[in-house]
Length: 305
Image 1 (cartoon, rainbow, N blue to C red):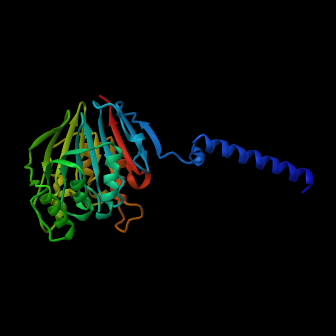
Image 2: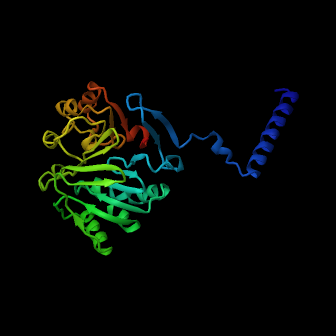
Image 3: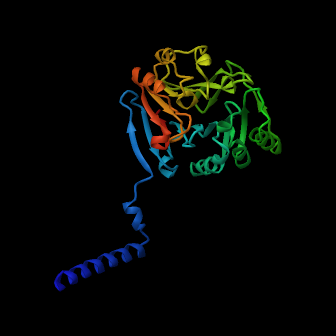
């Protein structure tokens, strides 16, 4: 390399260094300029023209909607587990709370979203990947009604939930099929709740939610046996049961409900093989658009009023 080229490169490096120093002095995050944004995708569904979807690896201020009249549904990325937040008119419902190790993350997520109270806290069934972080939620937020099925386990996870409930002088209620309640202007109805101790998935609380012109179904780990008993028809947005396992989401059930949008909460490269190819094929056969937390991270659905 010639001396002239070396001198030219030195000048370029010097100019670059000066630019970095100036940017830093101005308080600008230099590396953040080139870093991938946390919110990686914002789309409007063609067949759900009043719905916007945001996805991202972390819950940040980008996920906050200032419009309290809109319905917001968050599917938190908790790996091979479930946790969903529903928000409307300053009222909230949290369905499930991931694994034990997800408690701190969920508390942080809710705080980032400026949540102070959970009006309805639902533990769909007492498997660790659904109630693991419930005790952390109970400890850190004001809690209204707690719904869980009337089935108990002798696990430490379940006992931790009971302890957290007792320490705040709260109580656990078991809803009945047909019970209804509201989250803001969203109407919620309990479609299923069981007490099967041999297969806790069959005890899952299943909730249908209607807001304006759209219908949502939150299924826990309900299996095909439960799905076939549900008294419903059209569903626009489905939380796919049991992380996409082939024990759920039969083609008969999907043909009946015909969801335009299907959300699968599932861990990347999990040992269960979820979601199953059968479930994915069934969803594709009816034309559902599929979003998976293992692929896109956290998911926010905002339905505009």
